[in-house]
Length: 57
Image: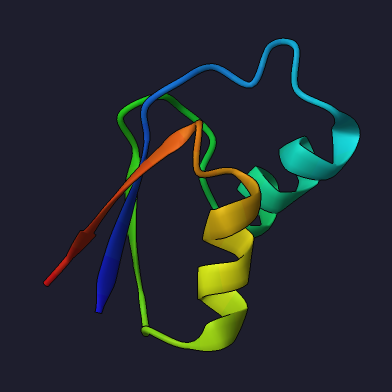
């Protein structure tokens, strides 16, 4: 399992990055979501790695 936490604002991000954050289900800063560890989620995290914090649990 991966815990993804939004730590930076989406202000100034391009629309694709905003869409990726929305697809991950993150709306507010410091909001966390848990996901199964698979290549699809890893790819989404890679696109917005400068905005999120990831921990493995």
